[in-house]
Image (cartoon, rainbow, N blue to C red):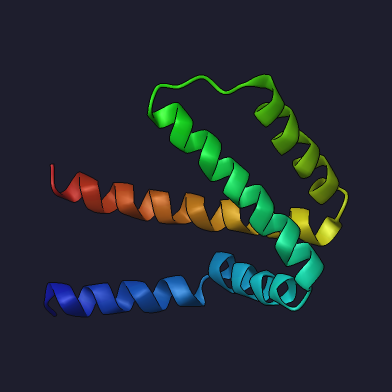
Length: 107
């Protein structure tokens, strides 16, 4: 087997993982709920704005921090949204670990 075959196998393994399947299922459920999807997208935009400012070394003003916290509090009341965020986090952790393992092979 060559490296491309292994990459293909890894891709299949990821798609067959419970982390990926759970995330995709919940992503579909969120997508079918336009109101919740919009709230999550708004939260993501604010989150991205804050991260961008932080990466540029700028301070986050209290109003912006308060706004994203309030938005998260609203979203957090929806069990499906929290389940989605949890599944997203678990998939991200798995992908980070896979990347680490591949990176270690390059050391």
